[in-house]
Amino acid sequence: MTKIKLYKNKDVRECIIQLPSSKSIANRVLLIQQLCKESFRIKNLSTAADTQVLVEALKGNSSTIDIQDAGTACRFMCAYLATQAGTYTLTGTARMQQRPIKPLVDALNSIGANISYLDKEGYLPLSFKNTEIVGGTIQIDASMSSQFVSALLLIAPSLKNGLRIQLKNAVSIDYIFMTIELMRYFGIEVEHEEQSITIAPQQYKAQNISIESDWSSASYFFSIAAMIPHSRIQLNNLTVYSLQGDVVCSYIATQLGAETHLLGDNIAVRQEAINLSHFEYDFKDCPDLVMTFAVLCALKKIKARFKNINHLAYKESNRLLALQSELAKLNCAFYPNEDAWMIEPKEIDFNQVFEITTYGDHRMAMAFAPLAFISKAVVFDHAEVVKKSFPDFWNQVAKCGLEYQMI
Image (cartoon, rainbow, N blue to C red; front, side, top):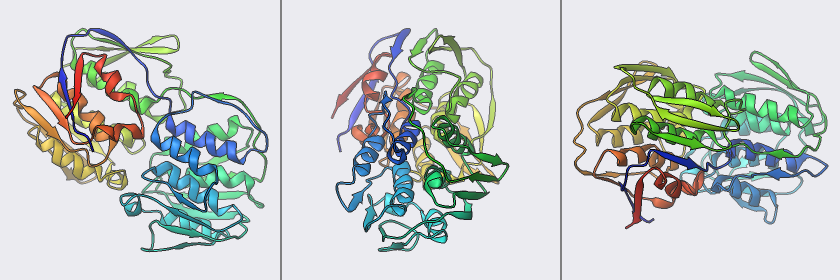
């Protein structure tokens, strides 16, 4: 791991940022492409490590697939491999082997899959043996991850009897809606009624597609805009008419001091003067935005209540504990209270170099980057961690007036 030092170099009022394409959309489209009998083109495919790992996994060059630390790719490959003839092993990094997968495995086995655990029950590595999944009706607890549901939805049209999914305690529901809308784009009829989704056996229809920019990645520049007076940050190929649930970033950021302006297929973000002492939001369906706005609240000394975020414990890191530890360095308390986590910031001495631990989590690095605009410098323990979702992040954030050096 290479450390990186980030510090303010100059005042930049206007800049244009090139965001990565949405890996959430890209990963779903890749699996659809694999299941579609006709070929189609994907334009602007994400270069994020998570997406590239899935590209390699779908090539099928080995019976042992190392999904590394790619959570979405892991869940999607689990469902996909369950439908394939042959014997396979699915494994990943040490952290990936700590992230639960039992609800998905149980659901797949209940409709004919033959998946077993090679080590600890409920976790990778997994063994897949040749069998026939016929489909049917399943109930799945999606309180840990909506990706379990999306994985099942994507393979549903290829099953002999289709699939009816009864949802229980679903989080990140907007990601499920994204999956459904993409399936409809590729010709699949989906019946969705409250907590039940039904998909009959049918075929995906080839359609060329261009992947839009990633709203989760955009959130860091909304946070930066909120910190820089008189700023104007243009974010290209980003639209509020998006399949991505994290488009709500624009609404949240407005409350915290970053105003959105539409520029055709692009968006401009400017600082907006606010007088806010307390902020509250339910992040159940947009967990990837929690870290961005938790740090922003700390930096702007806004007391906050972040509701329904307990499932962040199962992400790339235990993001609840990671945030608690690193926000403490900003003299900010972060602690659980009933169905929420509270943020209580105090005065911060910015005339210092802050050392931030990323815990191998890309979002920890990017969420804390705005700290560099108002402190002496920020040192992150793992520069390369951003490759998971935003490989060019350090170059793009430098356009806003920051300098970085590897140390």
